[in-house]
Image (tube, rainbow, N blue to C red; front, side):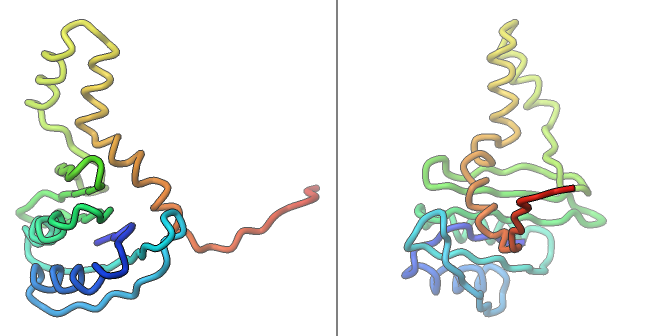
Length: 159
């Protein structure tokens, strides 16, 4: 899946061209307004491709620093899954994922976090949040919820 959470209007056609080039086939997105950041658009696109296509999409989009996006690649028989997140403030985050879409932190990264933290539990917590991409998740979460177009039913009286 590709989620472009926010894109300036003028950049939209260029995003489509870049993703199409990365996948080797032209694509057309259905863009909608992004209410979290007025003046920007958002889109969701389901794609298929050989392993490594997600990396090509993320690489093609990282050149536009004003984009907020996520790319996920499902695991295959001979490949791990992957997830890329990008925000203008934080840049690109990459992680391997398991079959359920959970981020997998490699042993070496955990050992690094333990070494940097020494015996400081707060620092270990900070390092593990960094390894999990928590800052990217925190920044993208409001943009993700903006895509929930399900109607809201207010209950004034229950019972």
